Image 1 (cartoon, rainbow, N blue to C red):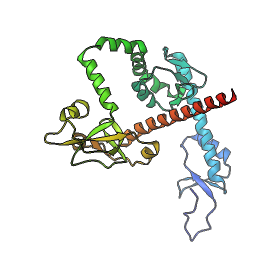
Image 2 (image 1 turned 135 degrees about the horizontal axis):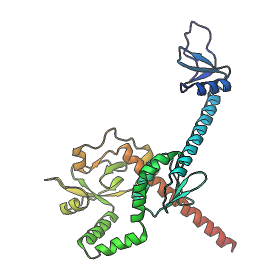
Image 3 (image 1 turned 90 degrees about the horizontal axis):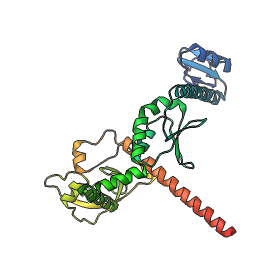
Image 4 (image 1 turned 60 degrees about the vertical axis):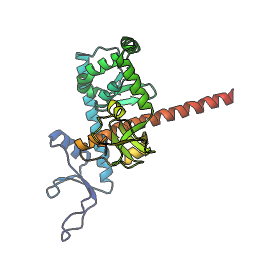
Amino acid sequence: MDEQTKDPSGPPPREGATTDLPHDRITVERFRQAFPRARWSDRLNAWFVPGRTAEKRIGRWLAELEAEADTFADEKGRDAFAFEPIESRYLEVAPAAFQIRTPYSRSVVNEIREIPYARWDADRRLWTVPYRSLDELRQRWPAIEAAAERSEPDARRARREAIKGTEEAEASKARIRERRRKRYPLPADDCPPFERAIGTHVGVVVFIWTDGELADRATVGAFYFPAANGEEYIWASWRTGTLEELVTTWPARTPPAQRELKRGWWMPTLAELRIARRAAKSRRRASERKQKDNSSGERKADIA
């Protein structure tokens, strides 16, 4: 912030920038060493650094300070892990960070995304978690490991064999068939705006059209939400939103009310949009990788 708010009757304002610092002696001493011309301003209740490039210099210094803090936190996490390691076939220890490689599981993804600074490495197909996030990783690891084990091919196969021919298996197949149709029941007299992101019981979607076909109440209740008494529903086709659409969608300030949940649609919250945006980013990355692989294959074919 420029020191441009001085009393106009006083001396001309000086060029520079202000910054607030943690109130510990060591940080202040390091700041004074880096900026010997800095002075404390009682009026601004902040440190003032003169000079045209002061804001940039302060920004670089704060970034370096944060990087040092992260490095120190990583060292602490690495030492703590060495003292009490997590033994698991899904967790690898690398010099820079933990590496998590599991069978695909939505539960695993949801858990890891809650860990600070966790990152998906698309090239190596694994998650990385810095050592500074050890405490959160340790807290979530039992759920991550259990979900990964449930997602192993043998475990999935065993579950399918166990329910083969049962009503549960038929119900599961019916749900999959219904979701593949990409349709959703909407109240005939209370439809949402089309071509914009809408929250529903199947996630955030974009409704694109309807021909007014009435939805069977039994299907609505079995696969979507309880049908309200006396309400008529029509089928509407939907698609997933693009990343641009989801990023520009303004989130609702409050979660959906009970009336909206019963209706079946609402304006999406920030939490819902974040999930949809992550999925859209994943789809975009997968599409870019596919295009890159196709281009590489075409070039090799041309060379051959």
